Image 1 (cartoon, rainbow, N blue to C red):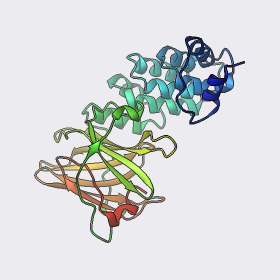
Image 2: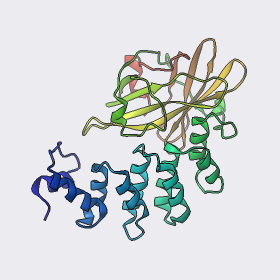
Image 3: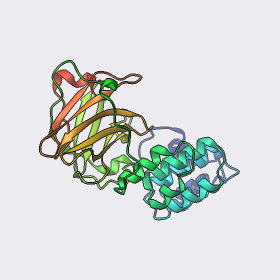
Image 4: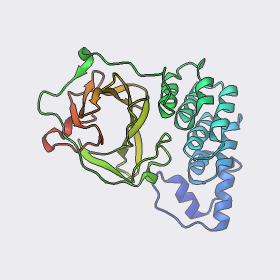
Length: 298
């Protein structure tokens, strides 16, 4: 039987921080290995800071699919040097579509050129390939240019820019897709949700992953990445800018003038609302006008 404090930690989705004794840590590792209480294994993997245990879970063919899927996702967020090679190895032998989906998503977070090559013949991996290519400044994997007929500009004034507040990137739980984020981000409240928008300096000459948009969970205040911001050259003086949901669909699209500002409009799709966002291109950080907040990132 698990100690009461450890049992409470594993049973409750949002349990408060609990001081663990060395014996508790060892017991938690046993759960993460699947030796005892397999019903709590996924939760234990998330609590134990151990790439080795995550790798074991990823390779455990006898485990439930949710265990291998969690191993793939958590390993890609762990910053372990071996994460990419382990995920590539798992991709070769894993046959379950849900687990393969998580492996491909993990490679999008940490993959390099080797992953890009390995994903060429993999079904449903085009978004991961693009994320990797943009992160490494490689052409040939650009997102589609959205036609004007597919855009939903706002009827009223556009959102303005800019402004920023401190954001601890560590609260993104490793979900930064290889971005070296600045210490501040634009944080906005819209429709009852809180979002943090963080962007690194733009490289206008090559395709680049330049930022992310994170959503704060109401339960515990943690942030998780919901969208990624990409730029690539359109002409000598302009850039295309695409905001992609991490599912791979386009949320906003527009252009930026290298000598001026940028404009993004919402892209038609389920749940989309007419939205226009403008601001200076050198920052791409957003602070919303009070009257426009409910339209943003719905």
